[in-house]
Image 1: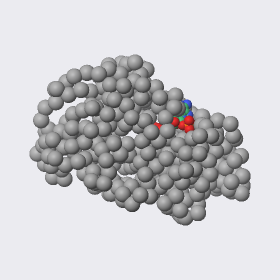
Image 2: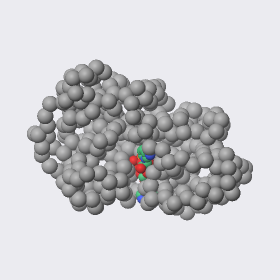
Image 3: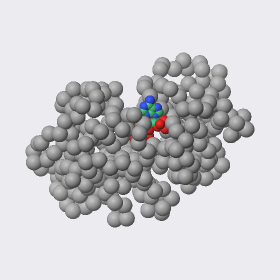
Image 4: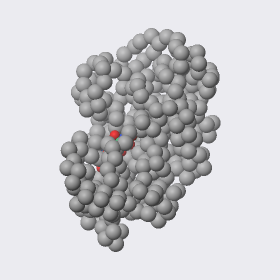
Length: 328
Ligand SMILES: NC(=O)c1ccc[n+]([C@@H]2O[C@H](COP(=O)([O-])OP(=O)(O)OC[C@H]3O[C@@H](n4cnc5c(N)ncnc54)[C@H](OP(=O)(O)O)[C@@H]3O)[C@@H](O)[C@H]2O)c1
């Protein structure tokens, strides 16, 4: 028997229920993996509330690390006993044991712990595709300014460090002075407390009136429009999340008026759609982590059964860095 966290209706954290279920043998292209740690991500909240709808009942969770127990026909890159980690659809990572498609699962280097693996795959692969592949026209080069919202969060602290390693001047925003300090300690060149400061005015001041070349905005409703005002002409806004709510419909003419801007709404799942792209992105992520350039900071650990508290903490902005759920 395996234990999993399931919802049978969309709603609040109280809908999360611990259930027991049997787990069978992997079919073609699948593996069975025993989790040592599961990642907590904001997308789990969107899926719990139904903002991102899925069929019910649903085991939540998109990220975990553990040991491969069995592989189905046609799986060649993994074998029983391998340490492995993943960020992937379909949901179902909040459990101690599951069968899942092998395509998005990669071997985890010995130097990276299970907790780190579970804390970094979804968030680290996201930073990989944002900073390396979601760039303004002409690319990003050392010295360029970029704005990254929620810079003290799970994705945010990885971005601060990776941007520093690329020589970028990352301006991070965060909701408290303590979170701003954390972002600076992790490589942000500047930090703005957007709970009490006008971040557009501060970005203009920091960049000598020019604006930034790219904004990475996962806050959504509360920041989207003002993020456009932070961009230099031809700048790129990557709107990649909605922690404060869904971004309102955009009048495309605004992009001309504000300086021939670009807007994209990317998701990790397009980038990791094939095994080859997933492996290439994971190799890049593992290289920056094993070199020490990016450290995976886990500030919250919860027993899997305490997942409701983990959701409450994440939604009420009480967390910093990454969080993991431990199946025990
Ligand atoms: N599109 C993709 O491919 C992709 C992939 C991964 C993650 N994401 C997005 O990236 C973001 C970060 O994910 P994460 O898991 O690392 O979470 P996180 O950043 O650790 O937590 C979310 C943070 O958002 C900020 N926030 C601003 N307004 C908020 C509000 N009204 N309610 C709650 N939080 C608010 C809070 O930081 P402050 O208190 O500092 O404001 C909060 O700590 C999420 O929006 C997620 O959906 C997108």
